[in-house]
Length: 209
Image (cartoon, rainbow, N blue to C red):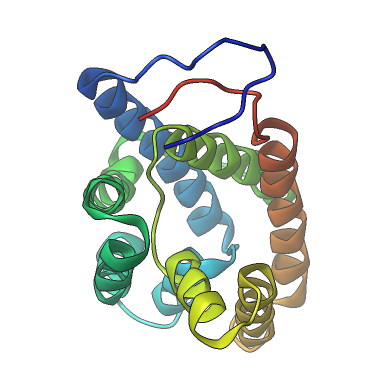
């Protein structure tokens, strides 16, 4: 992987396998705590996780198994678009998040939780966790990978496709959740994107995987 760095002549240090493993565990732990906050406050986010939340709220299934199953069809695209190494790390990250999301309610119990606080803190946890995964060449898969495929196959920009999918999820959410929860979910998405916008910039981080 080729990157440009802010300091001339400085090359990023390769992440070790142990460093990658620690990042996958910690990153998915952050996201799973965000999932627990959102589930308790009945909020949702975009992309594949948003679909998992909607299905959780309308079925007897919990987030973990739904999220894991929803991601399965996208790994073929991930191999073609991003290669085996990225796909394997993403598979591990998705599996870890699914497992941690199932275990987290046994570790953390809320007697009282303000929904606005859950939206903001949960969004920040999503952002920090996803940022860690990005910096170690992994992701939480799903619709993000599909967006890259659609961009190459049909010429539709990945960002535009992703926004379209998130808009559909948001509209569907109004049929499932009270409107204050949907609006707070938008606030949470803003918190997550703020974390990624500030921190995920070319040259700001020089570690490579």
